[in-house]
Amino acid sequence: MHLDSAQEKMLRGELGEAKQFAMEIVSKVGDAVGADELVPIRSAHVLAHYSSLHDAGVEVLERFADSGGRFAVPTSVDPASIDLQNWKSFGVPEDYARQQFRLCDAYAKMGGMRCWTCVQYQVCNFPREGDVVAWAESSAVVFANSVLGSRTNKITAGMDIACAILGLTPRFGMLLDENRRARVAFKLSLKGLTDLDYRSIGFFIGRNAGARVPALVGLPSSVTSDQIKHIGAAAAAAGPVTMIHFPGITPGSKTTAEASDGERNEEIEITRSSLSEIESDLNQFSEFPDLAAFGVPHLSINELGELAKLLEGRKLKKGVEMYLYTSSQAYDMAERTGISATVETTGARISHSTDAEISPLKALGFETVLTNSAKLAEIVSSEGEVKVGYASQKEIIERVTS
Amino acid sequence: MKPPVMKGKGLVKGSANGVALISMKAFTFAHGVEPSTGVVTDVRSDVNGMNLRGRILFYPFGKGSTTASSWFLETVRLGNNPAAIVTEAVDLAAVIGSVMAKIVYGKEIPIVSEVPRAIYARLKSGDRVFLDAMTGVVRAEE
Figure 1 (cartoon, chains in turn orange, green):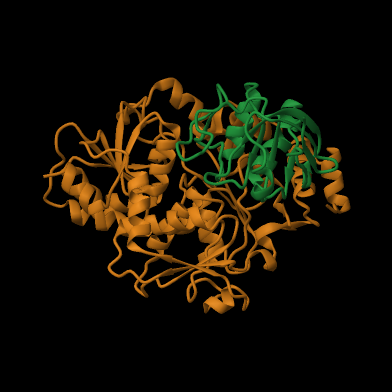
Figure 2 (figure 1 turned 180 degrees about the vertical axis):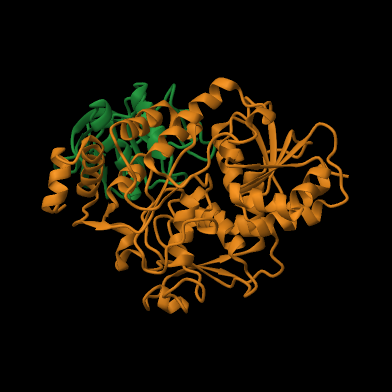
């Protein structure tokens, strides 16, 4: 990969240790994947949860922060492993919280936008069509490429910080037109889709697209950006998906033919039985759960309002907790608009700046979790410590409230 | 049958000699590998329950969380990483994890890509494999 003279200087350490470390990572990754050069980014998004970064990630992050690393572009920060405001009342052990706060301090030092959310595109990070960005968070990567029309590769831990410090990313993969074309088409003719269906559709696509960029046709015109968010999150949890063409929604893809640049692709029909198959794979138990969890990825203020409406007048049964995970910004808005009060009256709680798949569920005393998130179900069952049930929000509310 | 010689594209340089661990399904280190042991915990993986420490790990492509490279790096920090990785499509998380393993911990974990599943399917877990990411050659040893 070609480096210009300013970039060469960074690599030699003439512009400080942090930039050298960042350039070393970015240039070696660029070389490995056959990038031709580094291009400027308009924003970055970086990972911040201790449960997944582990001690190795803390080491890397602190090395950047302590050697003078500062973000060169607007950089939003993913959720933490704990509710940063109310962690004590959620029963988080003190030493666990301390490790998380080390990460938070490092991001404060480097100038991160501490929004603590995985839906930064609904909160504080708004690239426009055509902008090149370097985003971590697999669900947000799909949203950026598929809905915003921005361009990002699926930037993973370590590289995310390096790109944010340099304000640069290697040009390859999803930054190039030829890799963004749809190569398989999923067709949907089912009607009356539930919240669970949207997640299962995404999971089915992720499982069956392989390394091909998929298109999805047949969504109802009433589909919301939140529903699309959940399709993308589930697809990215199940497979290597970084973009889904939604003809009529995805910029540059008015039709299926435009999405594939005229090429005829294999077509895969998504049937009711495809979705039932995903449901029975993700649903490991049907008993009464310890925790009912909504909001992986984070709920928007609209989704919080919708859940509050469904919960109104109900009471949480004994022996179960219900957490609604959201961004700090939507949390504040929910407080001001009475949504929080409605939710709390039922016995449920809104938790912000974290979510269930990155929380130490076992340490918090949960053996079983019931959710409508395919992403959460996939992750929890993979770790194998906690059992997971997968059901629609309506069914969950019926099972755990009265 | 003569052991196959496969030719892919070396992404992260180095060579390795070891025992193969073969997966035909999307793979992730994130939530799917226990860093303190190297055991694959992902219930949807066809190598669930196997240990990848010191193995030459084959899988077609990645999946899931962008934290995968830090899970990978944690296996390196704890000495439980695979010896090398062979994939069909580029798994950026593995590339980033491997690049950082070299920079942060001085460990070489070569990666070869563009080896189709249909080709490496002729190997089985437990076969001895030699890999050279400089030439892209992945060869089963007699």
